[in-house]
Every structure is written in C-alpha cells, then in structure tokens.
Amino acid sequence: MKRSRRSELWNHFTVLDEEFAKCGLCGKKLSYKTSTTNLKKHIERSHVMVNFATNSSRSVDPVLPEPGEASLAVELPEEGTTASSTQGEAVPSTSQHQTAITEYVPKKMGLIQKKKVDSKLMGLFTKDYQPFSIVNDSGFRSFVHALNPAYEIPSRRTVTNVMLPAAYAEANEKVQQKLQGIKTICLTTDCWTSASNESYMAVTGHFIHEQFRLQSVLLECSHFSGAHTSSNLSTALIKITDKFSLGGKILMVVTDNAPNIKNAISTILKWKHFGCYAHTLNLVV
Image (tube, rainbow, N blue to C red):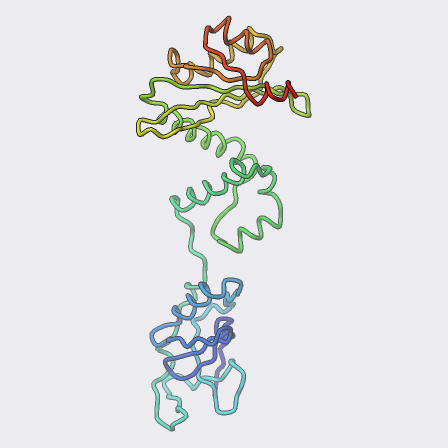
C-alpha cells in the first residue's frame, strides 16, 4: 500500500535525486540531504513573496519523482522499503529527510526583539508623522502579520499612553546628555497658531560640540496657552531653559521681529536678541 504526502514547500522544487532538488522559481540546485531547512531558507531569502506554510501536522518527506511523472506530489515507498534511482541502483529510504513541522510554525517573539520592533513602530509616528490610528488599519495589520506573524501590534491606547511617553523620556534623556558640559548655546524660537486655532511654541538649541561639530537639538515644541504677551513668552522661555539647566549659558536668541518676543528677550530676560534675517528680508520685499 502506497502513501502520499504533500507540502507546499515542495511545490516550489523539482526533486533531482536523494540529495538535490532544483528550485522551480529560479532553477538553482540545492541540497536537502540532512533536512529541508536549506530549501526553506532559500525560499525565505530569494523569494520573499512566496508563502509555503504547510497544513499537515505530521513531518514531511521529500520524495523522488517516478519516471515520466511531472507532478511534484509523487508517491513514496512504504516504511522500511527503498526506492530505485534512474540508474537502477538501490537508494536509502527517504524517511531520513523528514523535517519537523515546527520549523514552519512562527516562534514566540522574545522581549528584546519585541522592544526593538516597537521602537521601529514608533518611528512611524515620530519620524513620518503617521496617525496613531494606523495600528487599527486592516491593511497595515495584514502587512505586519505577513512580515512577522509572531509580532502583536499594540493598540492605539497603548501607543498613546505608554509607548509615546516612553519614547519622549528616552529622547529627552539623549538631549540632556548632549547638553552636558556645554558652555554657551544659541536659541531660536517662534510661536504659531494651527488651523484649529491652537497656539504652539517651539525652541531649538544650537551649540558647538567639544569636537568642534555644530549640534542642533529641539528643546521644546508644545501647546502655548494664554495670550502671546511679552510676559507670557518670557515665562515660557525661562521654564524651558531651566528644564535643561541652561541658565547663564544663553549667548544669543534668534526670533522674528515681532515686538512682543523682542521685548520678552531683550527687556525682560536681558538676553541678546538677533532678528531673523530671512524675516527681515521678507518684510523689506
């Protein structure tokens, strides 16, 4: 009595003999003498769009085609028997080439690897400014699952309440480390109102590193409540600079030529002010 076993992996290969098989996608000759891991890795690396998960719960045997048979789903000899090669020589049973199905089952992702992928996910929001709702999009979830079925995409609530604050704390720590040991720093700042009528203020710092490299860091970009008066602007600037221990290190502050910010810097804070050249030129034109 004969038995037949099929694996989607073998649908992409033509068995040449008891040791070698040819890829049906690129024609490359590969060895499967000890196991089919070599074949599986070839598909994963060279043909990434191919899905070959097996549905069988048993191990899968590579099989030799019978003379004149074109299909890859060929029959196997019974347990303990041997098959004949094209030269009529006896060959060992193919049971030695069995591959455990666990090789095709995604392993559970470790904590370190998950944190690494989570960090890359945060790059969608912090670098590409993608909306948090993308984690709920079916197309995006299917794409991530195809890349790594073991990765569980965090919910939008987790991204907002857990991952984003953690990413901010990490970025803030890096900025604090960069600013350690500097003697002077120049600031640029500006305020604006969004389309939804919400005010924001941003402050950037620029300094020469001890290795004489120009460094620029974003110190703050946050919602600005209250009127844009000189008093309110100076209070916000003091709060930001104190946060990074920059008191007494402000060499110059570059802003536009609005009277409120000029008064806040020159009159209230007693810092040296320099009007933005591009803004001045724009006013002239």
